[in-house]
Length: 416
Ligand SMILES: Cc1ncc(COP(=O)(O)O)c(C=O)c1O
Image (cartoon, rainbow, N blue to C red; front, side, top):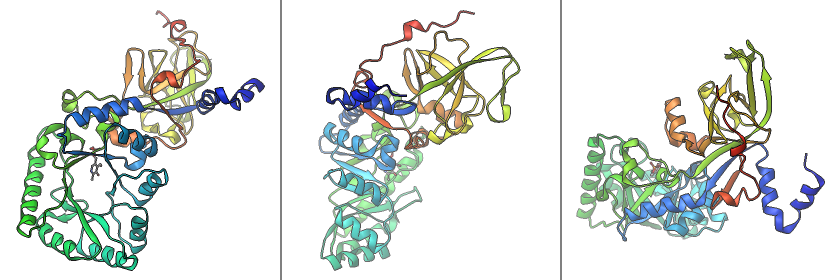
């Protein structure tokens, strides 16, 4: 319950922000370190020549980090264009007042969508002739030209015209009214693989397709191919711009890329202890009794669960950090809550902060750690945190914890 004093403070101008963030942090939340994000942009920019632009990939709500704040921050730090997957994601950024070019990477297949794309000054990807004709016809109704980006499939076997049909397709796009060819691009399937054979085959196909365009005197203003991994690996793949997602958020597409550039993870996931209790030996914990205590134990209940994006498959395997120490999660992770074995921690209190992903003291748990346990990739972990978790953006950790005393020194580990 909020005291009358806190309620008064919430509406008191000077202390508004602090108390609002306290309320948001009642249960569980995601912290977004905008300084780390800016650092990552600067690090990536240092890998690029001055004439190569950085397009920040902010689809899927900026990989779960919050698209608007991420877009504003990366643009200040040195990115000059954005990429999203869907029309709705593009509109969200425009409504927030963002005016830089925004490429829609996903499919746009209907006149209604194209009308909206044009209205919001977004830029679609063209992948096949019928789509290009539809886009041109729709735009002619509005008499509005639109920058378009032609996508070649060089080996991803996803969106895009097969690369060897690129010349014919580009000639058609060039002839169609109201289409302004803004770029030609392709996407790599295996740039994070230590064996680069397939990546370089795609690179060769891309080069051949571009050479074929030249024979028709088609010189696209911009060419682009590289995702995060290719941006880190080989400057020859940078072309006129790089489309970087994961590295912005401080993660590496594969472990062998770590040494190339120092990145800082941007996202942390935290929750609060909501109850502490002791249980006797032989007590089942959570649904299905997947865990039964073999001794008397102290349990910490935490207000976060699979409906927030903590996968139930991590039950009995997850570790968390509390006051700079590790604790293991026990029993099935439930929709809104999970349980910890905190028998080894003294002086724990309801309201103490648990770090699920992030740093506490000398310890760190990363999205890569979760991905490894789950047999998936860090991209999926980042995108998995649900909107029920408020995103708290800060420029340094002190911004959001101005009055909270560090209780670490009071929480020694029980010596056994
Ligand atoms: C077409 C395209 N380009 C670039 C990216 C960015 O990839 P990454 O997150 O590996 O940098 C993506 C992400 O999936 C993509 O689909």
